[in-house]
Structures are given as C-alpha cells and as structure tokens.
Length: 258
Image 1: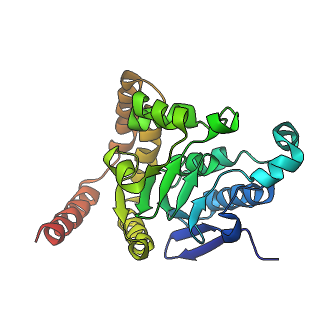
Image 2: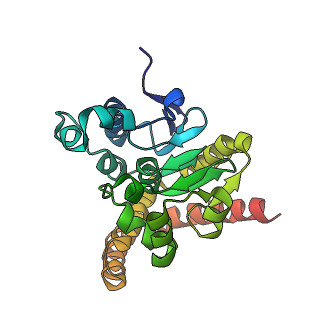
C-alpha cells in the first residue's frame, strides 16, 4: 500500500506531499496520523530546516474525509484511539512551513493551509470554509486565525456563505503571498525555501518564535518579549561575526538590486 504522506528531503528542505489524489487528499484518520507523524519526525530531524507542504493531484486538501465521517460520525471519530492533534504537530514543528497550495483547500484543508507560516498558491487554487453548510463548528482554529489574516468582515463572509474564494482574490485580501502558474508553484516555493536557508539558523528560529508569540498575544507583550530576547541573544555577538554577516548582506543586496 502506497504511503498517504510522502517526504522528499534535499539540501535542508523537506517537501511533504499529501498523497490521496483520487480522493482530493481528503483528511482521513490514517492520513492525519501519517501527516502528524511526519511533522513530529521533521521537528527533530537535524537535516531539515525548511518544510514545503503540498498536495498530489488537483487538490491541496478537500478537508476531512466525508465518506469516513458518514460511516463513523464525528463524535466517534474524535474518540478514535490514536487520532492525532495534527494542527499542533504542524504549528509546533519550530521550522518555517511554506504551503504550496496547488488546488482546492476546503474546510479542514483550508485550516491545514492556515497552520503554515507562508501561503503561496497556484492560479488553479481556491479556498472555502463549509463548516456552516455542514453544520459543524470548526475545531482547528479557523474561526480565530482567518479574521486575523483577512479582517473580520471578510472572514464572516467566507464562513457564513461557504462560497469559494479564488486564488487571485485570496492574494488581494492578503491570505496568500503570491499566485503563480501551476508549473511555477513548486520551483518558486523551493527557491523561497532556499532563500530562507541562507540566513542564520539560530536567529531564524528565534525570529520565527517571536513573530508567532506576538501574533497570539498583545502588541505590548510581543514588544517586551522581543526586547528580552534581543538583550539575551545580541549581547554575545562578536565584532567578527557581525562584520562577516554585514559583507554577506551587502553582497546579496547588490545581487538583488543590480
């Protein structure tokens, strides 16, 4: 039996692919367990510093497996032994996660994308929250994360209507960073991951943590945490370290502006 989640590692980048293309990468219990295990593995994998999450076929993910839900019911599924906290596994991985949204990202699949740090979409991608139409209350944070990203009015529009949002509108609303042609999506995301890799690893981890901390707290708490971290980390930096990095930044700036 083929794996439901594929991991391809190269040069510090792990590409994680949902692999149920015929089922539009619907999030069955088995797939969720494999995906959570993949992220738990990557959290401690010293060879991996950046993760790209995508889907095989024409969908990123159509959300929870409705056929499975129709047989078991939501309450029984939630009690299922070994059912993982998938979103926690992704958000606690401690490494940048780029969502390469290649197609449909619906309800649970939408929430999966929102758990990532950076969203990049194919022009064929679309997003929808069908919780209200299904009569199910979100449980993976969509009702809280979506308004913070696109504003409360737009979030209500999406969740109340259940209508699909095109990739182009998602970019205009600030939900995704870029929209690309389908054949350009993965090369672009891998190039971005390579860019991220070129920075200082320990500083990246701390800035990642600070941004997430501030997003979930108040501005004043975030600024105070940043000041505390800056005082601890920056105090021990040598002049030689700073000069070497200054030259690298200067050289890279010339390359990007020439």
